[in-house]
Amino acid sequence: MRRGFTMIELIFVIVILGILAAVAIPKLAATRDDAKISKLSANVSTLVSDAAAYYTSQGQANWKNTNTKWQDVTNVELYTDQRGTSSAKGTTVAGSTVYIVAEPNSADASDCFKITTTTDGNLTVDTNGTATTNSVCVGAQQLAADLIKTHSFGGQRIAR
Image 1 (cartoon, rainbow, N blue to C red):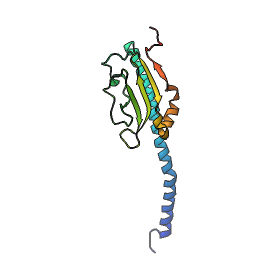
Image 2 (image 1 turned 90 degrees about the vertical axis):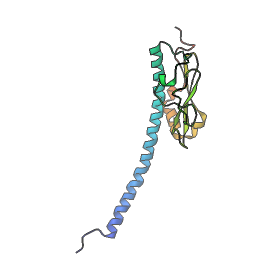
Image 3 (image 1 turned 180 degrees about the vertical axis):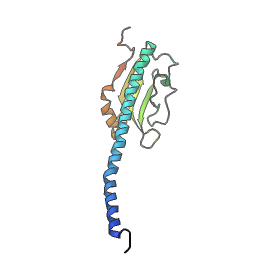
Image 4 (image 1 turned 30 degrees about the vertical axis):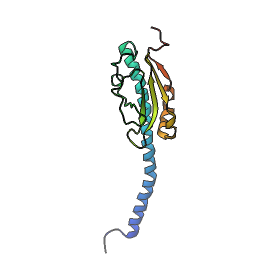
């Protein structure tokens, strides 16, 4: 008598593995998108918190100081362009526009959040209309909806 598996047994095993893979692969893609959404919304939250901490530590957030660079305010990856090819670390904060980008440096790059500052200490977090087709950006924007506004750190509405 021969020992081993018959062809039918091997085919059943391959079919079962195929069914398991068909169930698991879509879940992996959805989990990856959920992680990207969480990362982007956390980056927005961290940016606003870091700007508030900078305001607290400096006693003001008057971005007129031309020595204040984004790397002094936050560690969040910010970009000066909408495709995420140019880092904003060395960019002066005062009167600048930077972006939080999903999938930077790739064909799928999409600027999910646009951050602008004024010289009197305001920081505006806004969505960018071009990212509305990217499901990751839409999810991140929905998750961070309460942060999409103008944050005043020593701006015109703050009396000292």
